[in-house]
Length: 215
Ligand code: E4P
Image (cartoon, rainbow, N blue to C red; front, side):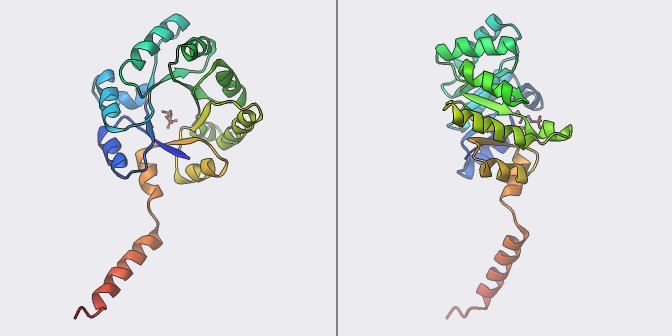
């Protein structure tokens, strides 16, 4: 499973990238707004750090405008994937963009039917938001399983990005059911590295190493 970082924070992106496990980055307007810098500046900086797909979201709402915005975003860097919100105008735009070779990530997906339509329109990626479904009492990971089954049944090449991840168990579940990508907030990625028994074990080995005669 590929691991993307779900953030626009440059320090976190640099740090995670230095671990050698990062495959890409997803951003959204909310994440970029937190950084207090211009949209394009942030996106360019991320593209200069991580050599992998970088999602940048289009905010226009009509098909023609989305297509124009997406083309402009895709010119920022070869690795740009344009995030497009799931609705009819978004689908029409994805169809046109896929014919022109612009990579797309259909976002704000909350049902398998939305994911089916996104794949039929030619989306490169689809992003089911599982945490937001969990928040309203619906098992988010269930729709990921359904989407994966549908995509496998019909051999769609659209990749499934498990998004709106809240904790490390979400990442394990995503990997167990064979999702293509998990996009993970930095604090969750940090928690994935840790186990209390690892810390205790390292501490004991270091103490015991000191007891070994050196001469
Ligand atoms: C994914 O592409 C989104 O940016 C993100 O996962 C949304 O997560 P949230 O529900 O925590 O805002």
